[in-house]
Length: 505
Image (tube, rainbow, N blue to C red; front, side, top):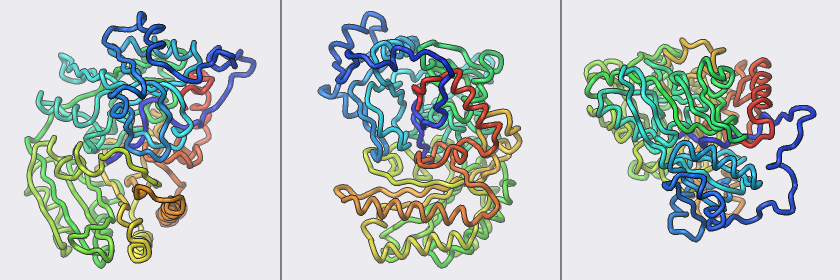
């Protein structure tokens, strides 16, 4: 589903200054510090240093609005100028220029970052949209990808060439945003998360230097990029494992149940998942509490979708528990893998991908579903349908589940990603109605906090975790990057080494 972290701007969590270090020019106070950026001036100063396919424009250009559109405008950055690098090598030059001219920079791919820290940004957007090349290596074991590729593009291209790889589940989202935070998705059961399949990365650091990052070159940074990478640099290209594409068709089955079936559904889900033992080819399932007015306007429904990598016959055997629960609607079918996102409502043109909405979010990581908690969450939704139907209409309470075998089999110490024991990713998401006053947003945030607390109260004894790609920026650092002291200490040390002045925040 939706993954919510931009390519190179994340939370200001590892702010660590090196003792005694001199302050670099780009953080010193100058009388000439830029207050307003002008595209003509930047083109004149920078144009001769970058490729002739690089584009620079400002708010008065008809390309500006589309280039700066964001999925969530709750904490929208202030973009004075957009630059779209034409070549990978341009990114380093652009960062150098920004440093020399006291300009903040924000690298983006598809604009799905939604952390609260984005709201304080004011500067230049580096849009990676032109860096979307894909080159399959002659071995057939890996491919090189430009830093601007996105899920739907990658899935289709590789499928058409006989391959598949680990991506997120939503076609409209960039690859690197989710990948740098771990990267859950449909093929994590057989192959692991996106970051588990990194072979090497080309990275531009905060000081403008371009480096090659893998197990043997900057191996410490390679560890950090696999789960906390947004805090360390801009990935201009990367090599990723790829795999034979497998069965020609996948089977999907979508259900809608009324609220009286909640306990039956979640009991079946816990049996089905077996606390992390989901059949490896039962790749993806997720569901939501939401309003479907074609069924009822009086309460939310329980919508759920499953995707199986293989035949309908085998899939339906695994789904027998759900077929036994009376549904008010169900549909199923067989499609090639690139069609799965469309069948599950995650295509580029589907509602989940719509831009320019104010979204209030909250997240939690679970091992199993707590039926009491789910009933409380559902009933709280139902109460708001009665008391505030306009607010309730924009809410979807998402539950994600994957087969997790390959994720679980990885040594958790081998990457910065900290939460491999979380088998379910929860996301409260509410679209605040346009034109609402502050009291509506306050009510939305109160509801979000309530639901998050109910999820976490339903797993006493477990630490509170927040998948960083779904975090809203108000969570403490350990909830996003791990509770082990050694893990946070290592990340802070690497932040001091590779970005001591916190350019990536």
